[in-house]
Image 1 (cartoon, rainbow, N blue to C red):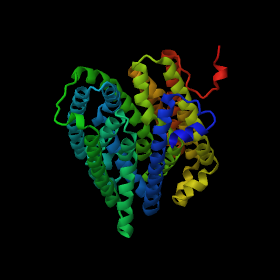
Image 2: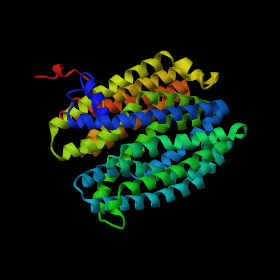
Image 3: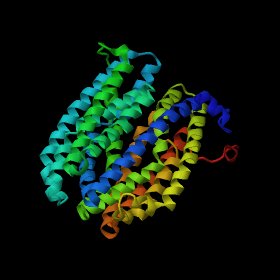
Image 4: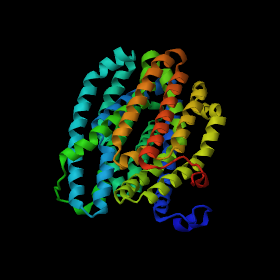
Length: 446
């Protein structure tokens, strides 16, 4: 059915097998991402309406700390597992798949437990001394227990993505947590408190982790009972650069929240996070396409099929830009109205929403540049770009947030996201001779 739809669309009728596979995978993923984005939007809406900006700010501060812990615990394993599972499964090497899976899980489990203990022991200091929010102590401690399940959810999602089980990957990474948390939150009714909302989120992560483990075992009967083997040094050498990419990535994503919590109040944290989550509606199509495109990039690069890689990268960027444009226009023109749905107090973030959404549109328009570099073995370049722009974000935040609050945080983040993606696009051209911008092909012909 999807093949017939693709054939009927002008411009896609002549799509090659690789683009068709991405479109088919992205169609399923896009549908699930829409569902996940809708559920997350509803969750944020209910959270904001129940607890106002200050209460929402406490939730997002605790979630941000847990997210930082989760990224550290993952140790760069996410993209690494996609790369090697895609490579070995394509060759039918299930011993290799078993080896990289078991080694990766062992590392993640140990790291998760260590990070959880650190956050638990430091939660009082962070709440009282760093953020000056006594009401944050309990939410932080509860959310710290979610670091392990969040880590495992990430790894199961990436493992399934490496097998091209995109539907299952997206179900556990984007749909299950907001769906279950929303159900818990609605069932609480008027008895809902921030502590109970955080507990609901924790329970949802545990359930999603369990579901992810089931989906992985169902997808890989070939490795049942097989210990497998994988070179630990090879895994380590690949993970370390990607670990730093992940760390600076979460630092970039979290700087606004953390520094607003430090310099300002939980009210501004809540307003900023609602604007940030709403702006991400522009770029969720990029996440959907990346889910299927990343293993395809790895496969085509390993096969030395540069023409197919170039065509896939450019065609997917063009498709994403066209799909994201209507969302972008809606967010820019309707920012105050959209934010008023969360409560009148949140309309203070309208300017921030416009700024953040423009940055996300640049993210989409440059295409899957980060994954192109990673899947072609240039993860160190990605790390360096991420580190440079994380420093830019931190520097801008120190200057702009005390002066402009939420808008200062938005400007800092927008400059960082747009700059990092433009730099990555430049290196994709330098290293792979691929121009990902959706420029008509006739302008590129010599």
